[in-house]
Length: 134
Image (cartoon, rainbow, N blue to C red; front, side, top):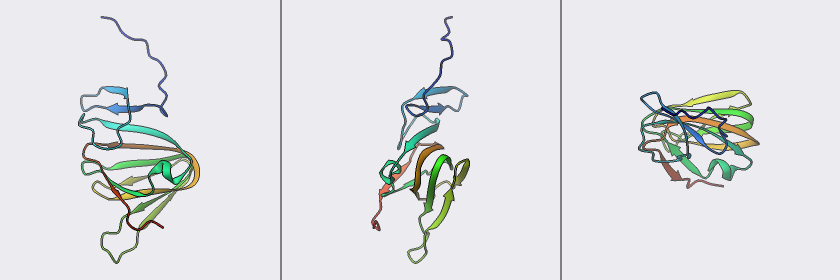
């Protein structure tokens, strides 16, 4: 049996897919529907709201998501449950994270350019264009 020697993986170019059987592989990032059953760990350099799709709501129906601020600053907004409610907001500074509940619509806006990391099961992920953009 031939084995490949370990080598560094550029986490800003690839994602890590963590499969239910324990396998971990470097792979292309999947931002929406992935049928692999794998959890995805993805990191991103972000400089503008466009880099975090601030004009869209996102929802993961099958798993919670950890959104981690490694550097910079970001605000995570939760869509109101009822039309008359306001958005809940969590502000993240470097070294902090928030857990987005399964099935909860959310979006990001930047406070400062930086690096973010997300960990979730992408299967079934949905994106919806915001209608309330400024």
